[in-house]
Length: 138
Ligand SMILES: [Fe+2]
Figure 1 (cartoon, rainbow, N blue to C red):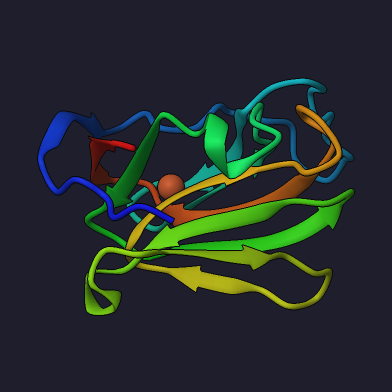
Figure 2 (figure 1 turned 180 degrees about the vertical axis):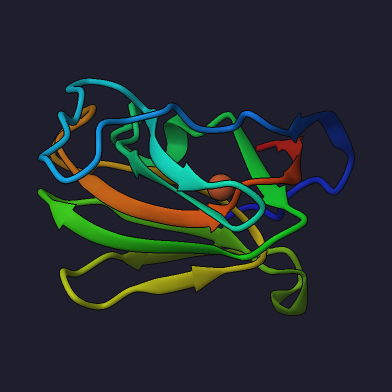
């Protein structure tokens, strides 16, 4: 696979309020065919969301993101692979096929794809509720 560019193309800040207010003590609905849905959070601490990539192969990925925080991913439905680009690995891409109950904690450039087609896999994501995201082109 080709090496990744290091030039940041854009930057997005996540600030309060970074998650919706939801009813407590009852099941919540997860939207279908949505790349990223923030479910809930706790101000100044964490937020939880559902990630479901629209890409179905690594070749479709047009950019990678990296945050000023670490991000937790765990598969909850279907198939989903993370694509990581680690500077320690000379910018080469690494594909991690997520498995249920095998979380991955990410601190490097990343994106993802669903090998069975767009939105066919879902991962639960936990991150802080205040951070900045940087993007680079693939
Ligand atoms: Fe991310």
